[in-house]
Image 1 (cartoon, rainbow, N blue to C red):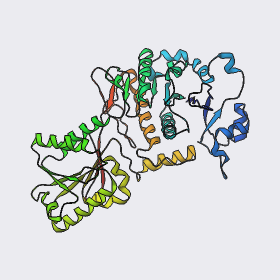
Image 2: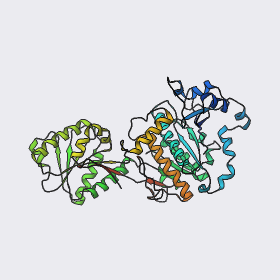
Image 3: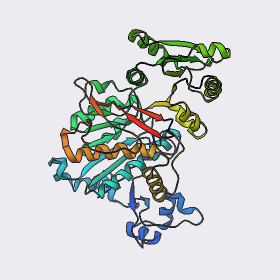
Image 4: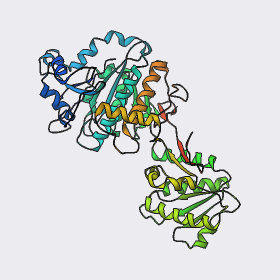
Length: 452
C-alpha cells in the first residue's frame, strides 16, 4: 500500500500559496532516525523538526509508528512543475481506467489540516483516524493511495482542485465548510468522483448530485427522526415534560414539535416545573401508565435538580414506572450520572456512541497512542474514531461494489466502533446517513444501543 500525504502548511497565513509537501512513513523493525533521514535524502534535523514528538525526553522510534517526511529541497519539483507526489500518481495513471475493485483506491482528503485553531486540530485527529483505517484495510488486502490537502476556512478550494492528483481520486473526504461545497460538488461530477462530506454543513447540492454522501443530518432532520423514533418506542406511555427554568435553553425546538405529535397521536402528556411543590410535581405523573420524562434543557445543573425530585417522588411512590428521555450531551455526564441513568431507565438519542470499556475502543485508542505518541482529544465524538469508521466503511464499500456502492444497510457488514452508517438516497441526488441510536441505560445496569 502506498500512502501519500500531501499537507499544505502556511508560514504567515493559512492562505499562503507556498506549500510544503510531506510524506507519511510507517516505521519498520530496526529502522533508526538516522537511517530514515538518509534513505529519504534529508537531514536528521529536518526529520526531527517535522516530528516534534522526537524532541521529547525519552522518545523512542518504534515499529508501526507513523512519522512525517519533509521532502528534500532538490530540483525535482522545479523540473516537473508539479508536486512530487503528483509525479508518483502519474506512474499509476494507466490503472485509473480499471474498475476500482481491481486496483488501488485513490483517496483524497480536503480538510483544514493545521495547528492554527480548533478546527485544524480536530481535523488532524480525524485524518489520523482515516490513516489508521487505511492501515487496517491493508491487512484485508486493499491497496490505498492517500493524498491530503490543507484546506482552511479562508482557502479558495478551486486552487486545490487544480492539482493534477485531485482529479485522479476515486473518493474525496471534505470539505469542513459550507462555502466550499459548491466548487467541490461540481468537480466530483466532472471527474466521476465520490464525495464524502463528513460533518453536518449546509450542502444543498446533496439533493441533486448523486456523487455526494453526507454523514450527518442537520438539527431539523435529527429532531424529526428522533421524534419519529420516540413515538414508536414510547407508544402507550404517559409523557411528563419538565420546565427547568433555563432561559438559555433551545430545547423547545424539540419539545414543541414533540408535543404537537403527541397531541395528533392521542398520547397523553402533562407539564410540570422544577419549582413545583412536591404534591403538584407528583400529580403530573401517571400511576396507571408507564411515564417517560422529558426535560426542556440539556444542562447538567438542571438535570441534577430533576434527579433529586425524581428520587423524592419514587421514594413515596415505589411502584411508579418511570423512564427518562434525554439529549446527546448527557453522554458527557455519564461519569457521575451513570447510577441515575440506570435507575431511571434512561434513553439518550445520538448519531454516535462510544463504549469506553469495550475491547475495540481500547484497542483503537492504544493504536492511536502508539502511532502518534498522543492521546485522542477528550471530545464527543472522538474525531479519530469518527475518521476511522467513515473511511473504513466507504473504502471497503468501494472495494466491494465499485461504482455501484450506495452505502445502504447491510452492504458492507461493518460494525462501527462509534458512528453507525446507513445511507439513503435523497430524491434523485446523493446519499445521506439516516442512522440514529437510542443509547439505553437499563435498570439491569446494562448499556444497549438501539440502532434505527
